[in-house]
Length: 311
Image (cartoon, rainbow, N blue to C red; front, side, top):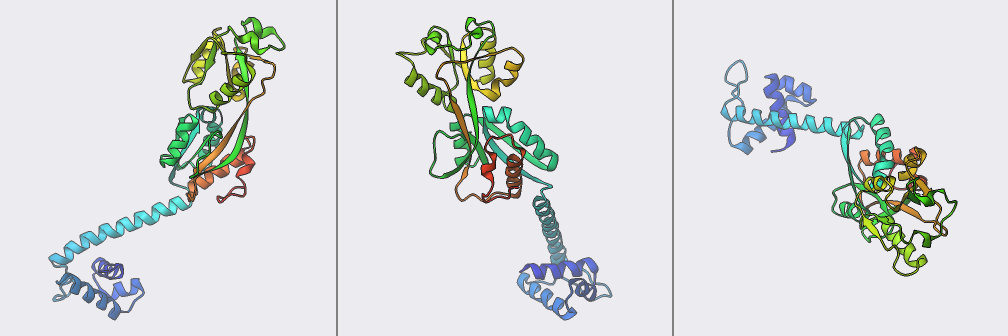
């Protein structure tokens, strides 16, 4: 049986008339009758009892009517759903982001996106750069923003943001009042490391190796949470290196002090990653257009001219 046959049957059952069904389907009555006969041949039984003045449904007809009503109700739901998806009234997008991007940049993107497309559900997953790339490869997220330390053959990447790294300490630290500090002067001060897998850790490790003498720093503490690292430094324990955007509020509030360490000028690059050959949904295209249009990413304009629709 085919859909046209089911439509003819359903319309005859709903209207109680072959003539009315033909009119509503824009067919001849003969064409409708042929569809019904073909359907009856398929099921091997009669679908309508025409012996009286009114058309009645025997057992086979009642069963098929129940199933056809479910089928066409589902068809209407599908049409309504995809109509909503097309107009971005409904949908879902999963986005991955590193802690820095997810905490300090993505909230503005999500808020702007939600104002324009309130019916789209957003699932934001956060982790370090290695974890975000793994989420993209495993299709747990549609796209992600991560540090551009490693490239993956199966992923496309677009550079979208550069963030300055800062040495910070407590305002009560004796070095806080100095205009500049030599790296050697930090030798005996505890250093707070970020978790493994972060781009910051890899860059700082390399910089220490290239610029410090011997085993530096001598006293360290590793924390997996950047907010915890900031808090322990605020309390006067050691120094750390964090992205400027993550320290801005605390520096403005006088809770942290930037240390100008001689020769230190590191930046972190972030990129948009997505699987090669990936076709973006309308919701994802709109998210990328929002990200590109806000201007909060230093190189967000690099998204223009790619397969999705950006301003």
